[in-house]
Image (cartoon, rainbow, N blue to C red; front, side, top):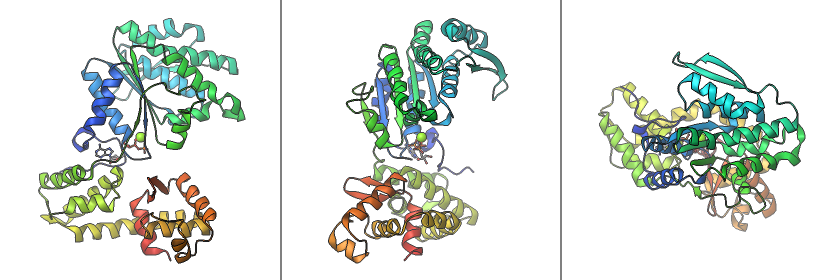
Length: 389
Ligand SMILES: Nc1ncnc2c1ncn2[C@@H]1O[C@H](COP(=O)(O)OP(=O)(O)OP(=O)(O)O)[C@@H](O)[C@H]1O
Ligand SMILES: [Mg+2]
């Protein structure tokens, strides 16, 4: 029997919880051709939400394309991957190739047919003639215009998801040409605003970079609606966990779902991870029921398995950061700058503590939740609480 809890990848339908309001809104906006920004810290479930939205838009008759911007090592590689993903909405290779010739003829694409994952042929696209900065700019304009042309050619709404979108900020700056950075955003913004039949979702997991991109002086200022993804409703998540255990004939002790959500800090990834690992342990023992004590046994196993990793992460911190992190863990992230907390944990001056907290947030160890500093990884939080002094 398969483990019903999934983490570390985009969740399948059966493990997707809640998010009905967000999903409904996102699908409606995309089908209406809006340019939506979707922002949250890491592992909140952006990619999973986008996957659901694209599937739903597809059922409503739209074409859908999805690309992870951060997976490309250069701007040109991104443009190649993006062009390839766009033309693959046309499943007939000969027609997709014809599109490339017609729609991108001026930038002379090199097109090859390759065997795809299932053996079916797919197209590989390269732009070997893009060498100078001007070439690349012209190429980008053509590629960014492609979605509009495809929507027209197919007479259908097209929905485009650019995931880890904050990575575009590094493209123009390759080789230190920082001044050109904003040109990527300019080119994309200029193209998408004319594409009435193309909905875009730009999702990003570095909130500060994404928010900066929406600032007054940047091209995407007021380009479209902004969705800031929150955590999942804890009661709904706890109920899901309990129900999945029951459905696989392991009886959860009352309150187990809530205990998992709480221990995981309600971070979607961590909730699924703890539930997944607990389920594995219960299954391996042939248990018919599972409770909070079992949960703590699983937690101890996981902490042991992560020992080396956490040790390294801890060693990498400065002494001031270690002290600030310990205080954040033991004080539940509250009142860290108060004289009382600083004295109790020997943290030094408020500005030193603030600098440490900022560094920890930047490195994705802590996350700001209102006035509170939450430890992102709940396992690391437990490890710091138990194994450091
Ligand atoms: N709606 C959901 N219901 C249940 N679990 C979820 C949901 N969304 C996310 N998760 C859990 O969180 C994990 C991370 O989700 P996902 O990859 O979609 O997040 P993300 O915000 O795109 O993360 P990253 O910042 O790493 O790209 C999933 O593998 C799953 O375990
Ligand atoms: Mg993601």
